[in-house]
Length: 375
Ligand SMILES: Cc1ncc(COP(=O)(O)O)c(C=O)c1O
Picture 1 (cartoon, rainbow, N blue to C red):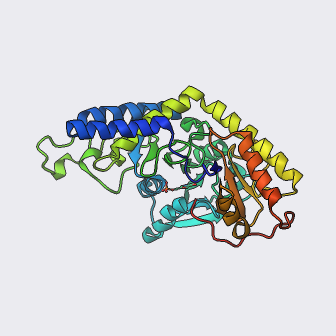
Picture 2: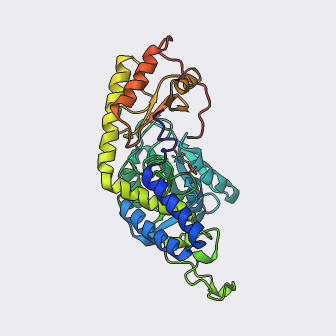
Picture 3: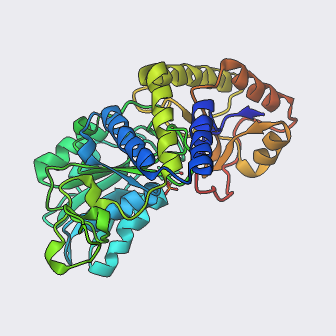
């Protein structure tokens, strides 16, 4: 198979597979050495923190992006009449977390999704009830790479909380959490971080101690009771992002994440980014030869390195690509081609040859009406 679908999920890589196999072997042979696994969890937390340029006390493990965004949305001290700004058409797993705050009388205003989104896109929408902005760093449906740092600076200037979904960028685009100026950053790990579904990350700016979880479990506490008896007097929250964690963890996936980050670091995140950008340049060049449009931004400074949506209607093309052994995703406005570190230009040549072989009009392809699957 020609795999051009890392924006959906990445295929299992050897270090991740080996980490799962080790976990299974240990569980099978020694009846679950939990403390060994928990020690590895803390090692992975350190790796994640270093990867994002923050302290380990600012990283929580969650289930996925949706859970991270919901934890963030509900931790913000918002009240009736307050407003959160988002981008129209941004990933629904981010949007619903905030739309659900309507139950508490908190409104969401969507600004238009334009090719470039930066501080100026939001500025005129901020009024005296605006309390927060939430947005994706990279869009799943067209590969925009928004100017997060400028929005972060705007939030600092206006005293707003800033919540960023990095699910599509992490593992391909270098992320410096502090430079983003985010209050929270949420992500899953099944794309650029190479780990199968079921594990998420949450960065919390530990200086924002007023941000508290809606849910509580023993591990959320500063001093979990040694006798395992819950009392109202011992409910002080952990001073770390552990305050947002609940119960037992997805231990095999967390160990696999440690192995995945080692792999990414060995290759170098900048190298991964540059490699994907080079593949993207080549793809655009080849699409231009066929007069096939690109739905998202073309320029490197505005586009994600690895996500490209071709203006080929999904309802005409998806099945054909599948039958041709090429794995891509249907999106709102066409077929999404997305790269991982393992792709090579020959993969793009396969795609282009398959398009050439097909006897249908290529240029001016009608816009797809097919419902995008939820990336
Ligand atoms: C921007 C973005 N956010 C979130 C998700 C997924 O959310 P979750 O990790 O909760 O499944 C995706 C795609 O899977 C995405 O592209």
